[in-house]
Length: 404
Image (cartoon, rainbow, N blue to C red; front, side):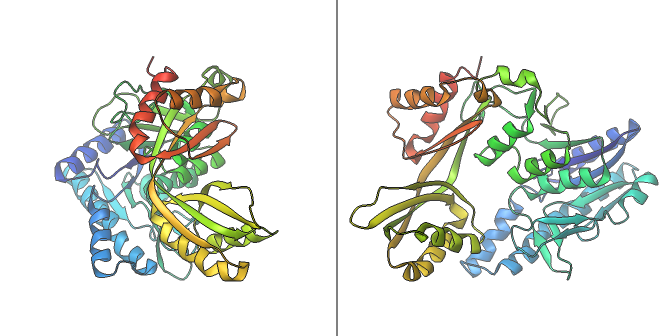
């Protein structure tokens, strides 16, 4: 008997029929002799609808109240899923994040997990019940409801798998696994049978929508093997695990496109020690994550500083910088959301030279101008005009022969 954590995303539980399909799949896993704990997301479109309602009332709603609102979506799904299992004569019980013991810090809308007690989950599993837990949410030690940001149900799933010492965590979604690129953009993208935590983390962080980056990071830290697979068929998915030597044989594993980017530019920033530090200290206090950074050569005692952030955080970043500039000695700040980030990822980059040169050549051949560049040991990312995003992604995928 295995202990399995299964996570079903919003499209998998999008309506009554799909919830019933999920229930049948869960029961089939139980009937094979396994214990099953389940994490579910809000139904597809529900979170966006709640956000839209909130912003129709207040364009910049209070984050604490947003958490109270958004937690509703998952709580609907856990109840409906439990009811669907009851209809199949499968004992099941639903649990909110708080009831499942998800303790988080107080960073509303992007909380981090501190501890998972599990509540009575093990007891329920031992009694033959399926436990359905609301993903994406938790509570602080003083009882405040928190959410973990977009894709937070992935994090809930791998964290619960770690806490329960599950044999495997299965992430069910609307795709069959991790692909060399988004199949909706690149028709000849192919499924990758196995991928390392590092590669999956880079792809997730660079814009791949398959998994939340924090969830992959948590899996790597706690050695949680997980599989990304489709909830609509029984085909094998993609296993994500620790790196093995054979993975370095592949020069580039995949290409990711992120359209959720904004470029912030600080002009006429005083060219003196500590100026950049104060800018990014202010952004850090606003709890905004910065990606690419470029500083131009100083002219006339002033420099230009450019960086990218998530489009969702751009107003917070601009406000933080504007408030900090008077104390630095001047400067102006502006932003644009008309950019995209394209990245190539592969642990094989450690042992294969020339990947960056090949990437830049492919883009040049297709008339794509590079605005910013960022690299790591297994990744090269470029910021480009939004209008070139799809063309560039397709060209890079073909140029590295990823569809072969």
